[in-house]
Length: 119
Image (cartoon, rainbow, N blue to C red; front, side, top):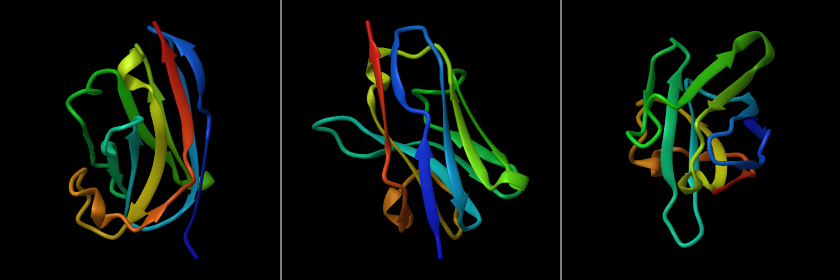
């Protein structure tokens, strides 16, 4: 049974940092997605169990996805946060291909954790 539980969200000022965690028992592909009010859900970062990663252009150089296999935990380190990063962040998993888009390929989702960045 696939279980995904996110944590680590919160409110920070622009320029600040947060680290999201996802306690996961999932498939080969795992990733972080986000959805801002009134906008479609979008991919943020993807990692496969081999360690390959891909990022949305909007977060490259600021966000880092990583995993601790021993703890079955996926992380998203978010630095230099901007107000436009404000969204509900979700962890998701599924079988290959491990791509950010289309997000419909991901069938297993956590409940989300809110990130709010103020200017």
